[in-house]
Length: 253
Image 1 (cartoon, rainbow, N blue to C red):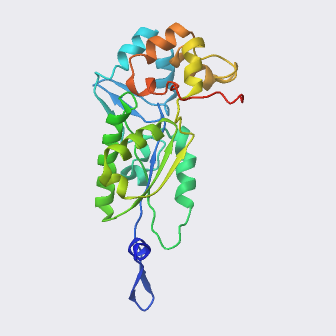
Image 2: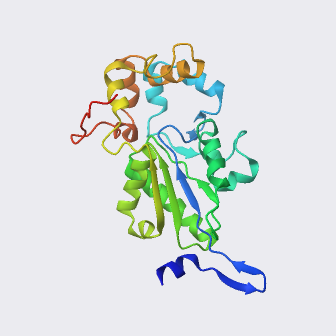
Image 3: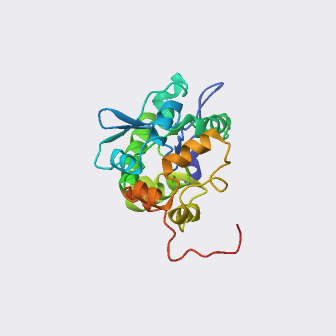
């Protein structure tokens, strides 16, 4: 009975089937959502000029500009995301990070289900529990838009912590999840984040020395332990990537 309720495929006419819609909802990782910050600033990994601007800031300036006290809103327009997917939130995530992935997921077929793909960005500066509530609200809107009963959830990296918080906090949204896929979720903390607390972002483990995008992003994060700690210590969400007491080094790289 439950499977019949999920599929709900029934004959409408001689050659027509009515198929249930099950939206696929993707939630990105830390720094992967494009944000408007206050009245004048924004965080946009799809803009080379914007990223270079962040890379030339002093650590204390970046800390101040990224302060969660400044209002943040996920962007809903952009030059790289397809115009016909803006209503599905695709401009809210960094296209350079996730564009190909969204296209690949969209190209999949899941039997008789209609599975429109949505990207749900969030203010990654905030506590993951707060971000989880924001994502839950958006999922509710998506389900209502399609009169859908179920959705499929896909997360990447810190998006896994956001969605785990959401599923724990909101039983209604959790009960409507038909399936959950977490990609590279730092369930016990992100070891690379922990290492940067001691070394800063540096060439080698954080990208090649001659890789321009890598150089820019390393400078944004802070290339010394002091600058990295200055920038990240003010951000509740990223700080929740710290390794937990249950983390164990298994001896692998």
